[in-house]
Image (cartoon, rainbow, N blue to C red; front, side, top):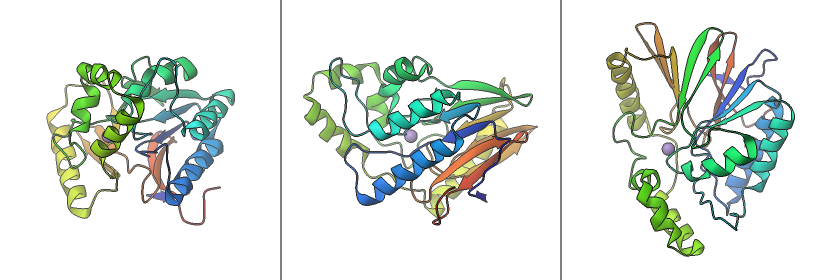
Length: 252
Ligand SMILES: [Mn+2]
């Protein structure tokens, strides 16, 4: 784990699981400011990969827009203006943002997983919900948001009611505990051992809020720490992935 990693040779920035809300506490304002700082620090890098659950809830209304996420959206505008390719892989909380982000930033139309080719390696990027079986973040939210009927149900609700419902369903996002982290590591090791018939060299996922890398039969699997407490991200540089933590002294 590196602190405040900066590297002119960096090729990709990975961010996941910030779970931003439209109404933010002072602590969450600080997290959002730090998120924007890191986007600005790395703007112009080849790839910026948003690996899902960047916002805690999004619903794409035909004639209205959810208020509160503008600082992130304008930071992403700057990233693209600086020449970076932006990728959005939808998480179980923000997959409904995929169409909006596709139209604004040319990300994948349905927020589907993407494979990047970096330094001769195929990097498969996925949010990862459901991949390692039921986890402490699974709850009912994924089932509602990922299911086609979820959109129909959501459309039938008043926006404020839908927002209240989503807040209740999603609960409080937090970093994994030590016990949860151990469970995640064991599941990730077993999953990679069992899945060797794949067309990538390195799988990178979010969702579990715990930074970890395991290796088997020449392939790697990385779970990212997320942007909660602590604030963590990853950088692809020099042919490998570096997991990093923002220190309290700030970042850049
Ligand atoms: Mn998730």
